Length: 259
Ligand code: 0L1
Ligand code: MG
Image (cartoon, protein in one colour):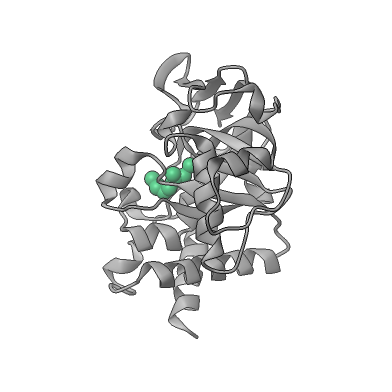
């Protein structure tokens, strides 16, 4: 078995068995590169597709300038959201199915036409976006204490775990998405807040960067993709019984309960 496959199996087993594992770069492969990490991620994606899972769309992670500075990186990362990760708005997140989940508020884009890099701009993305909608992303790193390096988190499908999409879909031209405000409340108390500009200056820049990153592998953003653009707020740790609410100016509310 190749080492890429071995690492993919290690991370998929951790997800399925809902247990945290030590980061790949601690023991399995200390010299894991970013390129190899995306190969591991691709192996995981293929494993899930072979099980009959469907991709909802790519997601962007580590999109805030503060997070990039903290991790010493210049580019954000991407991963993939699958159909089995979706929770309906107002639904339940069973804690026994998770390791140590955190939630963050995001704006999602529904793509109306293929977007192929390199050189894609935010304006081009907006012209090819059918709708925007609000979302709460639940990240659940498979690593102990969310302790990872950049290649570790890329290999781990960018900590992707669950997503609750809102039901209000609006045309992007109705908004100044960089100014769109959002609050993230738990049990009625605001824990985090922010505006779309927290996402690389404008959430459309995030999709443009995704298209440009995918172009390096000869891939593109596809018509029909529903893309999480990155956290407007920081991620908040969840516990049993939490009632979570994300409110988005002009895009309504997204909620779920941790059971
Ligand atoms: O969606 C995200 O921004 C998560 C990227 C991975 C970083 C983390 O797990 O905190
Ligand atoms: Mg996210």
